[in-house]
Length: 118
Image (cartoon, rainbow, N blue to C red; front, side, top):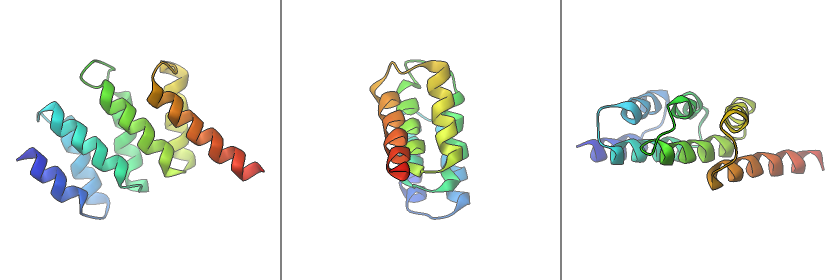
């Protein structure tokens, strides 16, 4: 049932759907549902997703949450907002650039900022 709910919410617009997806990210559902909900939030490309994606980054980095952190970093970097960029950069300053997802998120932000200043 969790996957069906994620699929349905992914097709809904608005902050209520983002909030419901955020609940699924941390719910007692399976890791597969957590990952799918995180992917759905990242795919929204909406400011409604900043807070729930940032909350994924504040969860302990374990083998279970590792994949979600990478998805959240990419989703936040793609949003092109100062708030989302700040979450990515703070995460990378404190956790480092050991993963390809972290490096890609920082490159996305750097490339965007470089293009603006050119």
